[in-house]
Image (cartoon, rainbow, N blue to C red; front, side, top):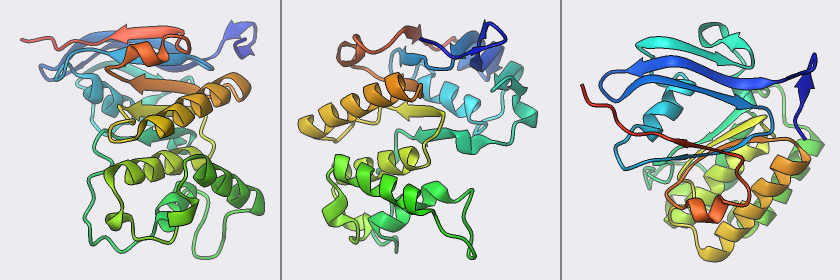
Length: 223
């Protein structure tokens, strides 16, 4: 079941003829609320670049991007989008922050020195940490963890704010098989029960074939 606005399917992300350098050219796609999207393609094909263009981490050179029916240049509510980057586990081992502090950054848009996350939000954080088996290491320095543990912490941070869209760039790298299965199950539950829109860059489409409803193949266009 899809969310409907004025009898129309609600589009969350729209790209029209988007181009960037010699990596992507005339890319057009629509992603609707509640979609579970897999983005596939060869290494160097432009998958990560596409995500960064959507998130405005890179500036498009041509075309149009709209987020939640708003032109990207005017869109301010990026807290609605959770993101786990491909290299999120690469962190200075001396970085002075605990796992709990890193995850708590997921609330940064709504908290300050004078406000704290609500009890309900803290309970959800604890729920996610338990799901990803990092509750017992929440007071550890993030730099002391294994790559898989860091990745689980970064995924938890992306989910803790209960975003409307979750963008994942090969997030299961370095995660053990049991944790991967927990992750896929949780994404499926959130997609089906909360209508979380999921955009998942992957080389392992077989693991997602029963979940996804759209697949985009991205390949580098050489000039």
